[in-house]
Length: 280
Image 1 (cartoon, helix red, strand yellow):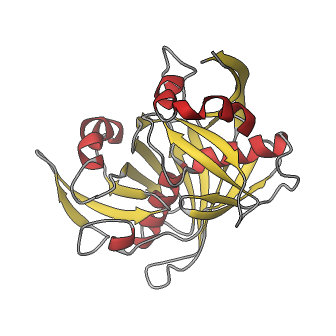
Image 2: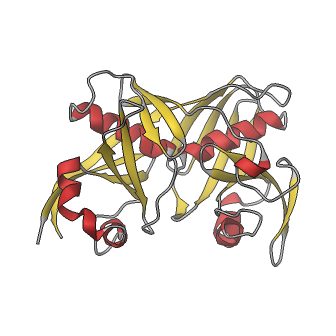
């Protein structure tokens, strides 16, 4: 039996387990199955995912990221903010702005005041083959489920997203169709799904079905993808407040449909829930 120390953190209700490398070493042979048990909300700590800092040859550090179903994923925006604060507080990095190697490439977070973290989320990926998306074009593409058709916008923020604008009950749509769209054959690596209601040129509401997790209170990369899709469709301007069930994120993107080659910036909170130990 091993006793493992951990921290539980959340960004807009998207919650994560974080552990130092020496703690991970005690149980690394039990992954990925142990990730499912640790993330279980009745029999474990409860979380949407697990992060462990690791050494990197191309950045200040890299992360190991397990989702709650035991799978690994390239990127998580809310998780990055929590990860950034965790590694700074534990003196793994000494600067408030640093680089992190992820499955989506190098990501640069910056710690601000009042528990806010600003993250350079890099450029959105719009080419269907690189998302990956098995459609001829990525904007306003018709996707057919067993009972309903949707006009979707496929965008990658290092992980695939399917953004759907709607005037209907977005929460119900996410619950009813999220799983089916996540596993749709148009997305060879599955996809996150966002149902978006546009409130104004600078504000949107988003309900998320997260790949590998299901309904979550927030998704940072999903907020970025939703804002980018709204700008590309000329529904919003370049600074967008994204309201999710767990709170709001602020997304900045200087791009447009003619010139999309700009980085996306996301600002939001990262907070500790509790720290503790668990016996494995």
